[in-house]
Image (cartoon, rainbow, N blue to C red; front, side, top):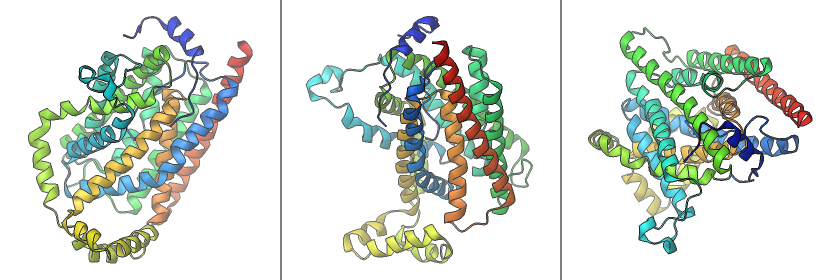
Amino acid sequence: MINDSDPSQRKANAYELKIPSNNLGDTTLRVSPPSPELKEKDAPGLIAAAAHAAIPTWANMVLMVFALEAIIKEQPTAGPLITFAQFVLCALFTLPHFLSFSAGPRALFLSPRAIPLRSWLIYTSFFVTVNMLNNWAFAYKISVPLHIIVRSGGPVASMIVGCIFNGKRYSRGQILAVAMLTMGVVAAALADAQAKGKSIEIGSEDTAMMTTATGFTILALAMVLSAFQGIYADRLYATYGRDHWKEALFYSHTLSLPLFLTSYPQLSSQWRVVSSTPSLLSTFPQTRESAVSSTMGNTALSVLTTVQKHAPVQSALERLPVQVAFLIMNALTQYLCIRGVHLLSAKSSSLTVTVVLNIRKLVSLLLSIYLFGNHLGSGVLVGAVLVFVGGGLYGFEGARLRKVATKKA
């Protein structure tokens, strides 16, 4: 059990920790070394972790957002089903790391845990609630651009909650960097949505004010709970060590699965709708016409054209509903993303994680614009400048604070 009321113990333990060289969700494990978190010699490891977590996942993010929009456009209430698919896939992929037949049936054939089960249950309650709320918001006519904009306030929420409830103090440089990052992502998302002709107005004709307000409230609640999740994870890892990110990934998803039983009627209904959509292969001609000017679209179509020549593949594509294909694509890319988040979380603070994720959102948006042949508007460029300058300022300020902490030590 965590002794949350003994910060001195957490600090001492943190200084004794060794940072692993191991392995992305977008919603989201936050782990923090205590301040002064990383000694100067650990800075290269942090930079490597951020690069390893962010760079390989940008293409995944483009695919994940594409699949998400494809599902939400047809089934706005499919949020719980999307979350369930993501959790099942992640639990299955991480299970082999913890499966141990020698542990016996009493331990459910799972290897011994480094962190008590009770702590994971508390963490999981935060984790699943945040994910469910984020996906539930789509049922209240919240568009994907608005979703990105509201969730971009994550660093601000983490900073405020950390200051009020965890006694953290931030420099002016960090505060300025977070403000620039948030404004940059919001500006870019707004400009991109307007360029694509997507509705982002709160009072649009097809969206009642009360419905939209409810959606915003849900997202705001998820953002605040996510910040508290970060605080709890900070204390958890400071107490038990920072090399248990795989355990966090497995238990946070596996322990969440029984909670979906209460949503079984809704999940079953959503699955029937999704599985009754036309097959992926039957939509191929329409996809060809709509993706002719798209770099990624042409590449994907070339691959699809090649693989469908094989009889077994063609037979499978003829049976696979297109919405189920998007659901699988979204779950797979989400798994790859959440692995990177856990890697970064094991080496940095909760605020740093949210900052890197915000930068990744902007880069994903830029890649999406380029790959899908969309126009790069001036608003997106302004947002990009704000994000990259803010990210650079945050990194510079973090390095400066580490040097100061090292000199004091």
